[in-house]
Length: 419
Ligand code: PEP
Ligand code: MG
Image (cartoon, rainbow, N blue to C red; front, top):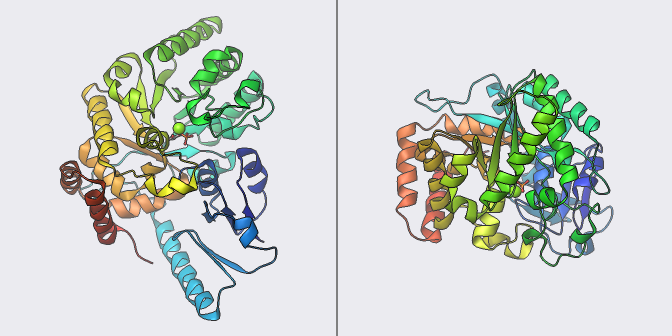
């Protein structure tokens, strides 16, 4: 087994890497929410991303230590460092074995209040863990990761088979299938106009691709609608910025539903809230759709103008920036008031301090990599709703990112598990 040191891993590479028994991954590109990090997390492989010139600085067969928790890569470590890192590894393994005892427990606060959790699915192999941990739902299926879409898109039957297989393997628990979120950092060569975009994150991406190339969208919608006869499926639209995108997408879904003679109301339609535009007019979206899910990875990227892939600005990617917290508050409060289900499915959904903040604001589901579920159960059982409310209040009354950051550090010291 080896540690792979590379420039970047693409969704297609990770398909193959998932098979190899890797000890770790180091990439030159990326930040904590880039696809390489998300995929490494889904594969449960320790990873450090954004190490500039790593492929030049580390040579083949060199001994290195990778500490994914600290984001550290140490080349040619001395004996003392090796010993202290091995001790840390033992403590971490012990911590994980302790956590595994929580597999059968529900996720509850210390006052017994249940916390809604769901899984993100990036690899089909994660279904096993979702079952093992008894996670009650899948809150985000990144369909663009499940198929090799670099060259072409799968046909309706291939998709139908996979969606029904997912339902079957998790015993018909509810699933949320996100329609193609291609473009941006998830490349496909199927559409030549994507090849030479100067600014792909602001380019032809996700719903924009689907409304332009409606054939791939209609095929996917048909496969999802057909699969919905076998279980509870919610269909989620990514990267929405405008009301008319939802209206157009819903019209297509309705046309395909009628064509397939599927009962009205057999599928809920929702959208990702991952642009500041959609957060500002959240009530208008809530009028139109059945549910929303906050894509915090993109919401932060677009709100703070920080490329989530760019390691040079990774330290500016600030989830606890007051502007982000205000947006999150507005989204959750509006959804709760209008009685629509709201979840968060970006990487922030697994951050215990963010979870406490959001639980203090209102009712929300946390959809995360299954690998984070046990830690969530272990930390959230230390607080009750009143504590979360106090935490949320404190955050909302601070004005600078620095103040918020200090408070985050304080809460991490207080509540995070040490090992
Ligand atoms: C997000 O943006 O937070 C999200 C869940 O979508 P993705 O990471 O796939 O862009
Ligand atoms: Mg997104």
